Image 1 (spheres, rainbow, N blue to C red):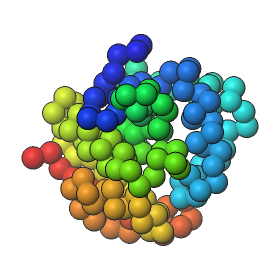
Image 2: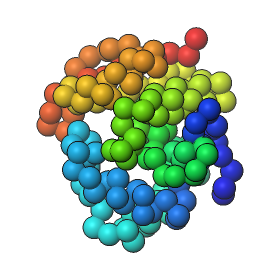
Image 3: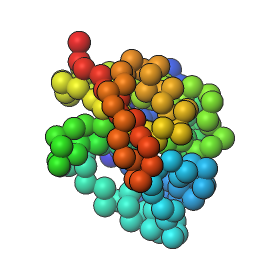
Image 4: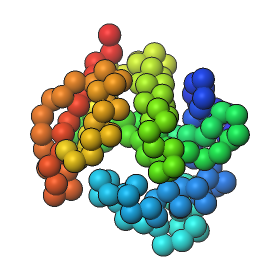
Length: 168
């Protein structure tokens, strides 16, 4: 399962693996990283490992969130990828990075690559992106990759925005 789904100039994106647990755990235990997500920290590295090894989105839908690694060093940077929501039929693009990698353009690079994969390889018709209104950095990423504002909505009890892009 070491096959990389997506390569960019600086990044490798691949399916979650057990070896990602420590980086995933540390990222998701940073209160600033989780600030706008609605998620709670993992109780332990073992809990993060359980999540990663039981993640079935790839088998069910043929895609999912992917681990993002530095292409040169293989350092864990975070995750980015697609998630199907059966209740609405939407596919959303989500991303989360370790704080020390914020502001380096990695989220935009990974998100753009995931959109390209969604439209060219998976031939999905459209992708949505959601963020809390206060999460200006994530909104900037959605706009940089060409997503257009659709509407506001309730995001985990906070004001949120919905963006969308259609395959051309």
